[in-house]
Amino acid sequence: MPARSGDLFARVYDVVRGIPRGHVATYGQVARALGMARGARAVGWALRALPARLERRVPWHRVVGAGGRISPRAGPGPALQRRRLQAEGIRFKGALVDLARHGISA
DNA sequence: CGTATGACGAGCC
DNA sequence: AGGCTCGCCATAC
Image 1 (cartoon, rainbow, N blue to C red):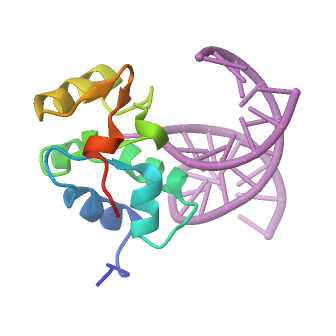
Image 2: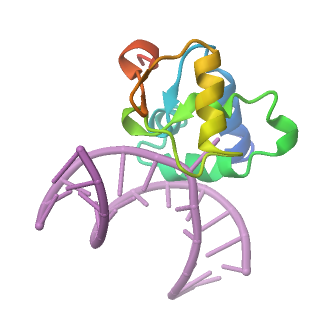
């Protein structure tokens, strides 16, 4: 059941926490999982507010932009995000994550 | 309560 | 292909 209660932030973190290792989801996909078909920006807002304390529990680096783009304003740095993704065996096609191979097919 | 902001997305030029 | 504008959603002020 979709978490309806609680802050949007908590719900976003919960969804992100569910992204399997070696896979990535787009902001838009996370938004849809929360029932916000066009709330990709809201998801970004929530991740932007991700407490450093939860950085270990929430795989924020598995959330990328549409088409597999890495957001220039991603957390500690887009370079770190890319490094962490590659560390999970995620392939890149140039500057984009290979969604065909690692994207969530839902 | 109106305006501004932003880890977005799709469309246009 | 690259860059800009507009639309969406939830917060902050």
